[in-house]
Length: 277
Image (cartoon, rainbow, N blue to C red):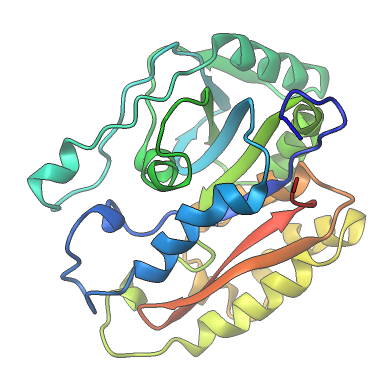
């Protein structure tokens, strides 16, 4: 089945993007194999999805703006928004084309939903996008448009953004929220400790995503009431891409398609909607 088949509906995904350029360097801030399992999973994700998408929309944890902004550059540059890593990681390339046409379509869908959004012809692609996609689609030949988080990090707003873009899934578009389901950097950088709070939050996250409709929306909007919520996310920018992905598949249950313990913390990825096969 091809992405151009109008009967094809792509899933939406919430994926982990690791720590900086972790998949493309010798890791020295913990066990050498810390990111190996995640890297292997990302490399097989395209096969797991099935048909190759015609285009990709990504909401990354690393771009925030006052209102939603949409990358509209035909050839977006990379933003190496990480510090203190080996010199070669600032020379990584991912020359995926942008799509001004898709960016305008996204803006139109958001406008119809009453969501202010602006095209951005200056912003590039940050590491929350190009690092995982170098593994998922290494050929870098699929048009990719990144959109920002709104900086107030309101869960209901980001669910609504995803909901507005849901029709794109029936047009050969893969919708992806890129973050980390556990993102307490102070705890992660404390070596040799398991994080029981991470498991508590991860169990809630997987159970919540397995529901759908208004029940799931209500639970996600009240995520701060989840067990160990603030321990898992002292600031929630890495969780909000989940709301984007969940909103794009409002009536479809989410399945944890990846689980791993990274630096002592439980981390998951969620797929909403079926694989293409």
